[in-house]
Image 1 (cartoon, rainbow, N blue to C red):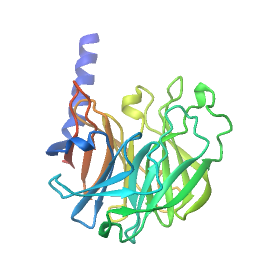
Image 2 (cartoon, rainbow, N blue to C red; image 1 turned 90 degrees about the vertical axis):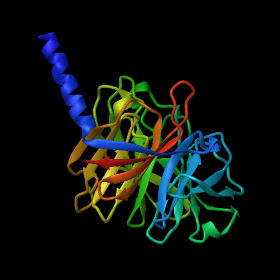
Image 3 (spheres, rainbow, N blue to C red; image 1 turned 180 degrees about the vertical axis):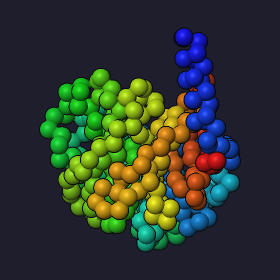
Length: 284
């Protein structure tokens, strides 16, 4: 009975993996070893940045992974940059909201102007926000769900997806919304998504992307890509959810749409584990 069960699970996992193809486009330059956000910009560039503790700068790449330009952000600190998104007018948003220990009382999002590609140094506008339902810093272990590594822009708002760190692990990502305007805001909780509850490497969201054109949301974890068919109305993020297995477990923290059923993705470099690459992921 146990042998048949193992074979059944193995066949199921292999089938999930077979639904996706993942092709490495390039090894990223060494200075991007902690790549943690990704945007497909103007149909000809990829934008990325490093994780927390690194310089406050954005890297502009061509579609083969070559560095085109580095843009520094003045009067800005990379506390824990975790994701990138863009609006329909070409502004780019940097999510400085990593909160591993759930101790931060305020997080930031930096807004780059539409003409940022023309400059080598810019001073961004800033959003500062708190979570409406966090009252303790850190909260109790069963409420450790105020870390965030994923967001996207839609209709003048920014939608944030929490990275679950609860003990015991619940696999729930909470969804928050704030305005896309500079200033101080309170992130309003509008719902949650149950991804799974088996293992944080499968269920903890590390990046998010939204395509209005394809009416789809992509949520990335270290080992899975979750796709949601967006619905109409206020709970557009609460559509049909499908899970797709990625090969191996890697520190994957950045994804963006390339086209219908295709994405650009990066992973961080870890000694002994590899990574530090740019990929194209396709749904077969």
